Length: 267
Image 1 (cartoon, rainbow, N blue to C red):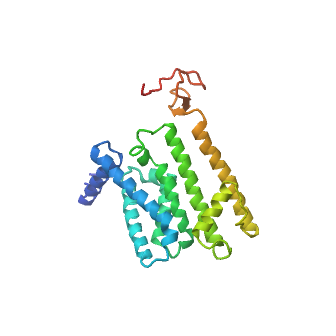
Image 2: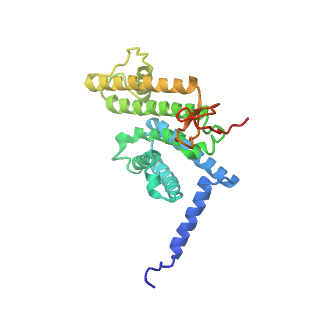
Image 3: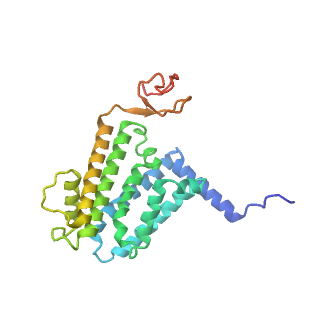
C-alpha cells in the first residue's frame, strides 16, 4: 500500500534493543544502571591518569600499542554514549562530545596528531562537566555549591595541564632550562600564580605572549574559584513566569518579576 511503512528488519530491531538497553544503563535509576555508570566513570578516571602520565611514558617500548588499546576502550565508550541518545544531533552538539571525539582522534592517529596529544587532558573538563558524573558519583551534591567548586577546580586543573603542554611542546627543545615535562609544569604554575621566580623565562615574542596568556588566565580562574567558594550560593530553579533560573536558597519571590516561588529543600 502506498505510504505504508516497511517492516522493521531484524538488524534494526537489534539496534533498537541495544539503544534501549544503553539508555537504561546510562540514564536509568536501577542499582545495575548506577553500578554501570560507576564503572564508566572509573574507566574515565583511569584514562585521564594515562593522559597525564603520557609525557613520562611515551619513550617506553610498547607505548604506542598501549595507546591504541586505550583508543579502543575509549571508542567503545564514546560510541555507546552516543548510541544511548535518541537524537545523535543533540549529542554531537554538546561541547563535551567534541572534546571526546578530538581526544579519540589523537589516540587513533598518534603519529599525525602527536603535537596535540597534550590536549587529551581536556577529558578532565568534560568528565566533571558531564551529567553522567553528577547524576552518579555527585548525585548528593548535584546543584549545590560543591558542584560549582568541583567544576571550577576541574577547569583550572585542565588549564594547567593544557598550558604545560603548550610550553613543553614549544620550548622543550629550544630552552636550556626546560629539559623535561616537570620543568614546563613548574614554569606554568609559577606563571599562573604570578609568583614569577625568574629562574625560567620564555624567550622571544611567542614566549612573552604565552606567559601573558597564562598569567591572565590564571588570575581569571583563581577569581572564578574564589567566587564559587565565598559568594552566597544560589539554587537552580526556573521561575514559572519569567524563566529566571538562579535564586537565593531562601528566596520566596522571584527578584525579576515578583512571582511566588516554591523552591524545594531538604529541611
